[in-house]
Length: 44
Image (cartoon, rainbow, N blue to C red; front, side, top):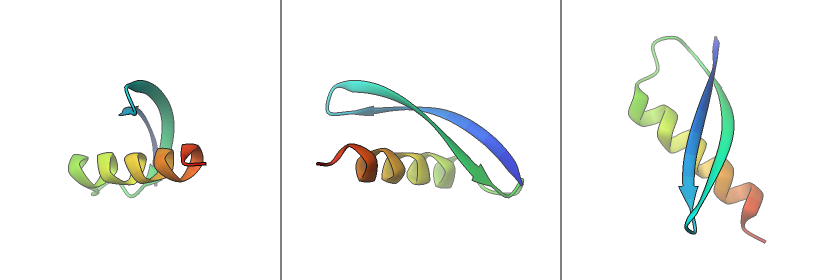
């Protein structure tokens, strides 16, 4: 498992988040997980 820091643009704002994934995980999947994480956190 590795920790990856990702910047996600959500509602015209940039958010930094970290995602813990397996080494084999594709960049597309990492981006998707990060975006979902930011949406869950900031969707009030």
